[in-house]
Image (cartoon, rainbow, N blue to C red; front, side, top):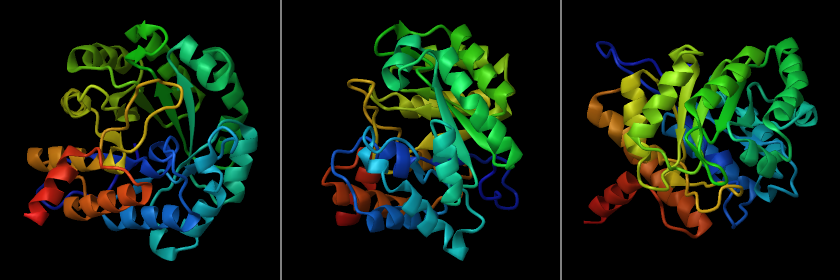
Length: 313
């Protein structure tokens, strides 16, 4: 696990938030943003106290136009000495993407697989096993370059094409990612169908195969259950969670799925629990309002919206 800010003296509980807004959040947004806006978004997020911010994806620009300038975004961020201690992972689908990411200065990368065969076929046009084989040279090259690799696992609760996914299947694929060399596996409820009652059995199955310290939670809020699922996962023992400012996001291969859980909502949750995240909620709310204005859309963050109303009143 990559730690966030150290908790203040006397604080024993802390959580690490991985901000995925600049990649997972923006990739499904219809309005394409200028390079300068994407760079400013990351700068603003860093100023809020976030220590790990997903900066982009080295994927086909034809499939994901919003990520076409990820090399320039990463290079612009890496050129700023003030961010030297922060982490800016990028998503790579294959060895070509890995090489492009390295050329842009990537120091951390992420790969992605699915626990659903149907979703894997729709998303990357191959089986789960084939997708993992594609990542073998990526993991080998990253290992040789001493670049840490994070694994994303989609559809850990349910799939838009297959329905519920067996926890044993999730555990199997998660273990394969870990055994290939991923330092952490982020468990994604891609369509946001999970509830504490379905998330908990999944976590129990995966934790029998992988130490909890190597797991992260990645929840979407389609049915309004994301914060509840994060709380359940935290109580189970997870200490790393992905979130997107303003609740931005969705998935082009998961019809009807809404965005990621809002970072503002998780900071509000953990502040209320007395759990240290190192993130300034007020600054984060302002950042969320700014990027949503750039996109011409309303924020999906309940906490962010409530804070904005309170300021106006």
